Image 1 (cartoon, rainbow, N blue to C red):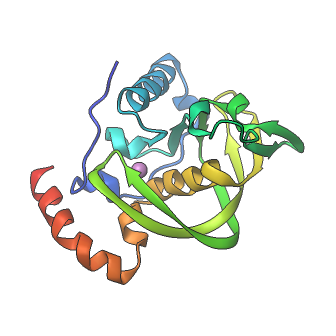
Image 2: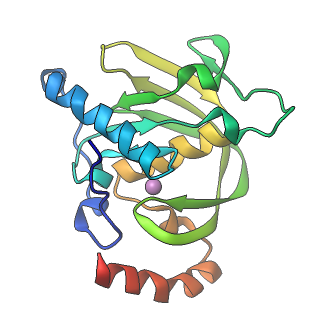
Length: 188
Ligand code: NI
């Protein structure tokens, strides 16, 4: 089922999300996860955090399609539980209650968000991430990655703390965004 995506101005995008407890993970929860993945695909997104579908819980889905990679380019790799793997083998990536540690050099990348329609902006973030990503089955994925996945993990985990990418743009860029954001907030 396609879920409505909450839009900029909705207060649910600004709350600190609650951890998911093992008791919460039932068939209904798994259906919610499947619906979030379907909703991400339908919106041509690569990731979705629970506040974006109106839930203040620490749940994220990420699905980076392989065709995001340039032809002839080496597949994007990640170290997963100590083993190097193409990130495509992790997709769709679903996790709860993440802890992430961005590291490395800051770099600028143009971000967008399904909850902030028609706005894209350059955001500086570290280029690598180490993260512990608990899975629905109780196992934990320990990941060390760069590239688009590192970017996406930081963007999505920000959502779980009530942050949006537009909070992280330079103050000069923020000036040009303010008017557009006000307009979005009025219409959400
Ligand atoms: Ni987003």
